[in-house]
Length: 471
Image 1 (cartoon, helix red, strand yellow):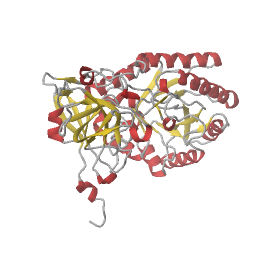
Image 2: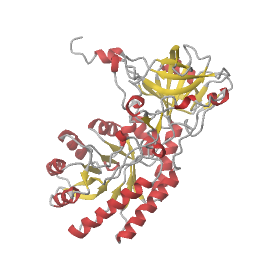
Image 3: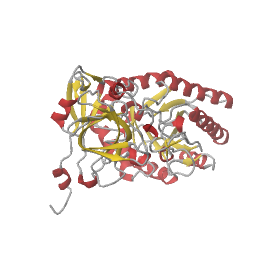
Image 4: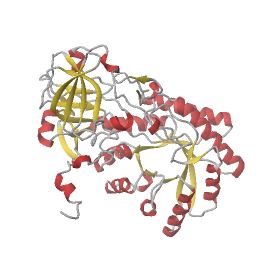
């Protein structure tokens, strides 16, 4: 039994054979739902998939498999939509959450489309710096920032550092004082709201590692300490309630609590909260049945929620900031795999399940094993009118939990050498990839206007051996 990671079905349990009922038609198994695949995905007359005007067979031949394919046009268009929609809803700043996926090229794309970048480590900061992103356009997160990371952020002029603990106040103040600057900071508040999402990616309930408790008075104490330090200036509060959120109800409760917190801070300390960052977490469609809100609708609802909460509290509405990541890069990406082994297995209830082994797995997509995440998969190198068969797409690793797509219908004539495409893998797949079993991480290829180019090159075994001091 497992919980679906998408908000509307939070708490509903589905059995391991949930998708075995209602066998789809061959046409349905061949179709590409626009809500799931990137905006330039299509099938050419031969039946092969194309993305960004490039045939996936050509991508596999030139760059090998597995490979992440990132649709530049799709990503840029989503970045523009978020920038426009959230600014119309009252946001002064919209950041791209780099943890979803970051490279120098992606940093350029999102910045050119009007977004800042939210980084959560020294490595992510280094990529943004290499891309030439100005410090003012950056915000830095992290629950345990090292002094080295803090110093690097301050030296680069990062526009916001989000304070996550009392210890961090002292560290950031010391680094800023040594640099001779006054560093703008925000305080991350946990407001006791758990978004309707998977347990492990719901981050605003009290029993977790992020932020300071709004209920216990820790946020007010942090503000009090920051106000006494001349090298720091408080610009606002930060609250993030989770990920893969499909409606605005969680934001409504969180916004009310953060606004109430801002009012208490003003009443008790005379300090106005100028900016409220409500984080990210906006969901995407991994399956055709998923129904996230349109970007303008979600933005308008959240803007109205904050305005109403401030009006009810009798305070001026602060400027808003947001940090979408998955919602921008997730749908823009897909993963291409080559089929290696096709193995039918008899199930207890009389049905057959076919295990389809591909040349990647949990090292390039851990989300299925980690969260029970669901994905859409299609035969990509050709079309087929064969009778659909129930499949489980699995990887090549030495783990029984090495599953890419748990339950899927694929054509009954699927064979070794075919290419499979898994949709919506742009977020949290390459960025969470590993070298388990000493498997090199896949490359990332960008496609646009009929051209494909390397964004991140594929790792080689020599790359991995190069880390070994005894080779």
